[in-house]
Length: 284
Image 1 (cartoon, helix red, strand yellow):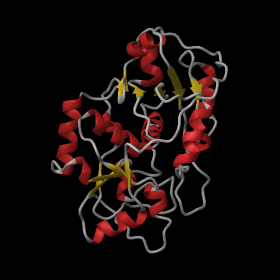
Image 2 (cartoon, helix red, strand yellow; image 1 turned 120 degrees about the vertical axis):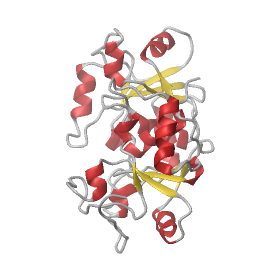
Image 3 (cartoon, helix red, strand yellow; image 1 turned 90 degrees about the vertical axis):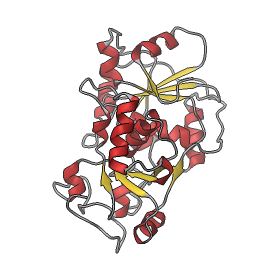
Image 4 (cartoon, one colour; image 1 turned 60 degrees about the vertical axis):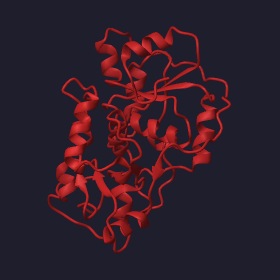
């Protein structure tokens, strides 16, 4: 079973081995909602099915619940079963963005209790770099699977939890956004810039090496410990702009052996939409 990362060559072997495998392409662009579908249509890993962030991995927006609010656990479990997910299916999530969107699916499947899910290390580009072919054939829909909701493997916190933590700090908030947005500069996604008071910045892209693959576990552990002061993962809350790239940090932490960190799903887009929410600017 793969439950964090899978290499292109490991996926190629799994595709040729008996057993239940479901490859899901989560390619997407925040500023062009159809770009991911176009990228998939132009060439994807053979057998992969496409998942749209806004449709399959998010719930409707209210203006107060963030840009990519989570659906209910029950709704998402039903969605995945309809795609063909069975209780023992090995899921591989991939994208064209360094795992940025694939990690969201990885986390959400763990959220509904499915452990056998891994992100393709290096993504679609890494697959091609290893000499594997892409396909433009859209595979037929799979028969509905028997997946049913199970106890969550992850932890979440709410706006109220994070707000209370400011006054009585017990956990450290890690913000996965770009440093300029963290400082409150060049904000393009949300109406208000800044960060949650007391948060520290860990840009999700720093989890990757120059080759687009995740850094070695020991290096990731060292880098996270340097930011957090060596805090246990259970004392950490991860957030970002809308609960997507924070999952990339959670995946990297899992690779590094830092297990048990929480996600604030609403993240900055929810936080900044709440009347009276405290906001900090500048460097941490």
